[in-house]
Amino acid sequence: MVEIVSLLFLGAFSGFIAGLLGVGGGLIMVPALLYLLVDSVSQTVLMHTAVGTALAAIVFTSISSVRAHHQHGAIHWQYFKKLTPTILLGAFSGALLTKAMSFDFMRIFFALFEFSVAIIMYFGISSSSHVDSLSKWVWRITGYVIGLVSAIVGIGGGTMTTPFLTYNNVNIKNAIATSAAVGMPIAVAGALGFIVAGWNVESATSGLGFIHTEALISIVVMSVLFAPLGAKVAHSVDGKKLKKFFALFLAFLGMAVLSF
Image (cartoon, rainbow, N blue to C red; front, side):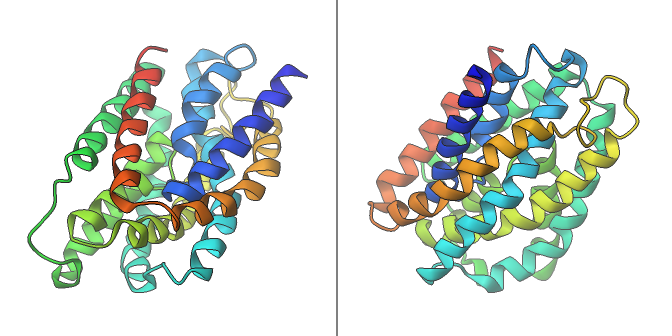
């Protein structure tokens, strides 16, 4: 009962943050699931299960979050279209690659990734060029890398898409909204990859491959309700403060995973 209540709370909080920051909620779900599932999942596949379950939950969270951001007219769909084709390829291949990765490798990779993005966001590192001047190959390579890394660490891509867009001088609120949309194809391709990767693994859960179905259902029930609330708040707060908060939040989560 305690675990179910904790998972419901996790769903509510991750859904709110997904809408607020356009990150899909995986940033919160992966570290939390490591602690919540530690007694029910073998440690050899614990990180894989946390990541796979988070990606599956993001499929549903992103639908709710994207609808809310779209109502505010904040999503740049032209950038979404440029990133999506190679994001799908990167996310699916990234999920398959995790089958060959150890728990510690994935854990440390996740933490270092968080710290790197936090530094970029906090100090406001940006480019002198605008996103519209980028070549099609930059979009393709960036999309593949975002998909690949996002699947390995279990996120909707907001931690990479948002910095990429803001680095190229896209307004933070538009970047967050567009990142929320990009999270959907990442989550779909990544979740399918984790189902395939964990299908015949004996130490995997009784769910779908590396996806813990009970945790998934508990999280989704609440996250889809709270994602629109987060999106509404995102459009009513100061952009600079939101950016700073985003960076500090990433650093905190990186430390939580590193100390596991």
